[in-house]
Length: 259
Ligand code: 13P
Image (tube, rainbow, N blue to C red; front, side):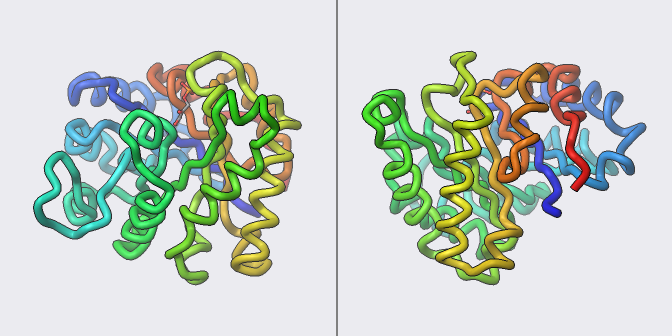
């Protein structure tokens, strides 16, 4: 069975010292049960770039993995404001979020650029977390699957089957992000199921069955259990509720069905 992945996206929150404190508190919650938790789940935190070095120190010796919120696809050069794979790997980053809806909608990242970023992450032997999700207007117009599956095709366009097994998809409906309006488990499952079948067409069964598909958008300790009960929801990408150690720790401890 796929191990669930609980990922914290801190977005543009927490200075290095605030991040260090949060991680100390999170470790106090999770470290005592790390071996038990690791049987069926993984934990990841993605701080802002400048908090990554402090987070790497704070996570030394823990089972919690370190992620980044974005990465450029070129290895180096005249790309003001961007960060490369080598810079992230230097600090032990293992996962990189690409194509978050805030990157797409606030910073103009295109489907094509997201695909190049995902491929560069995989080529650097890190795990891309490729985000997809429709806006409220697209949702209301009934275009959810068309939008999500187009983003998925572009996001994975340059990923080879042997790289795909470890890739992660995150379905984050834009109307659910930061709004308190979570997708119902049924809504999320229906999109996750469609994503899984596209992955199956593209990569074939063993690979498609190994890829984790996370749900993101107002995940809380109250709604996480019912989301995780769905067969194609393989974890959560958590924004607001990841900024408090106790609430994120409770999300990580979600009740999971025996797989
Ligand atoms: P919220 O959990 O704050 O809705 O954010 C979700 C998200 O965008 C995670 O990447």
